[in-house]
Image (cartoon, rainbow, N blue to C red; front, top):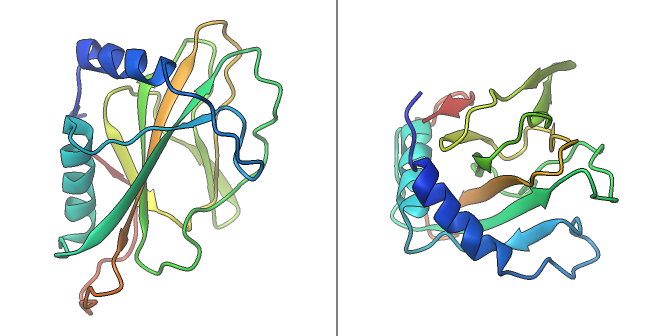
Length: 172
């Protein structure tokens, strides 16, 4: 499975993330932090993954990114399936594990009433349709789990091609 960062680079990002405050927005989980991937290898690899997924890269697109930081002391439950960008038809999301401890579970998805888990593979993007219901994994370890998330959507000016592929999970 191709990787977009190595452990040394991931550890560097983790040091940056640890300095960031947790989100104060009550509609967001208390264990999330905004983490802007612009000007990093993460942005380039995420956009490349979205391009591969769509077999197309629009001239204008938007990206938002954040990170889940959890360990066994997190009090807010993560047992609710959710989607991203429900009003953006061609939106994609991505997950990249910067650190996934031994006693933590993977991100879980549901499709056609069947559940499946992402592989427990760090340092690579998992790209999927933003409207695919998913739930974060649970960390039962004292070591922190860092799960980077990003959304990609077309800007309002982008003309939609009629040749978009049927959606599937893409691992890059």
